[in-house]
Length: 437
Length: 175
Image (cartoon, rainbow over all chains, first blue to last red; front, side):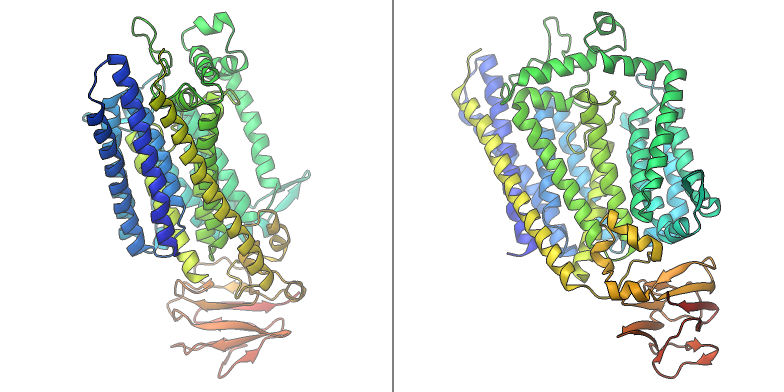
């Protein structure tokens, strides 16, 4: 069975999942309203499944014709993630789900455009400084617009709101991969040891520090903590892969610890996040505005799911009087809703899907022949993995909660589009690597 | 709350399909890993990775470079490399590991990329033959110079030899 045929077969479970999910939600909503007409509903949910399969099939054809040798499992895995997202968002708010479906169509369009318009992704290397500059500008932009929840996350274009950090993530990874391709040897060879610490030569390390330092400062400036953790981690991952020097990430983590401690002392927002994380059930913190309410509710919701969950459409999203149980259930806390409805089994399955995506991503990096491809694939995969870690870790009280989107699952056009471009780049690298192997 | 049996069935169906799907993909991932191990044991062709001698030892730590690096013991013992003397777009003193062989040129396929207007896209290549590394011109337009002599046929390299292509000059070194 060829790689592409396997990919096609793997898409079938994804569309089955969409059908089953939508059907279950329709049923639960009908039983709440007490109205009949279930035959019609079944047709509707089958239609949703068919449309989903159709869209995936379209993307599959693009891959089939342009990237014959690409990894066969990455796309179906992402389709399953998208199905989780659509079903859950539909369950929360059907209007949002319609918009999310539109975003998926646009995202798939950008996916196809990237694959068709960028047959040799290595041209990106030539524009590395331009790309880095674009990433920095993207991070500055939101400052010109009014903040949401104290953070400058989005740029409004008419009725649309764009989160540029999602795209900046791609730009910074591309820059780091192409820059470190050239200098990774010098970084190791020219390194000096100073007080048991290996320091890379400043001349070659400088540009990286400038670009990445600017990104960190800006993220702090726009108060996007989740993204800053993601960027920092991604940077250390690429640097480690490029130089194979354990001392670099170790120093990086030490600096991170020191920096976070400093910020913790200075910034009240961070201090309150950490306090909420340490004791979310403290009555005083629970009542406080911006306290631990969200986190505590998320933990209640997940505990309520049990092992096998309450079932589709069975979770309680609104208290009497219309007050939501979980704030932002369609973005930051969508993982909690999923665990509530599908239980530990569903949550674990979702994490497994992410894990497999990451495994495929690193596999692509291992197969790639040239350094830029290796670093690009490893960097994109690391950033993707860290994003999942930051939000799922936050929602499950493993680390202090910082808001980033759950890739392909959370509601949000920018996130969907940026992650589809990320996927397209991974598949492009994979295609080249497997063709040569 | 009345539990609709169909809804419950659907939930379990959803989870069952999901886990079967994951099982299938995880199985092929395992197969992939096994295959990667085999092919590594057989060994690969030209080492595209440019890791230097010190980096090569540690690069096993990430595993990402070992998959294509093919650091065989005999090769590590020789450790042939090109040191940049002067070359447009390169810093002098930078080292390229030659490994099993490498192509020098201006094109994308070249392992050692020259940003030199006088270089052809695939200009010259280094090939490992037994215990020696051989330099060979690949029908370039402007020729390859070994110790300032125009290369006419394949020539074995000795440590300290100077390889020049256009304005780019390298010194060949072994351990």
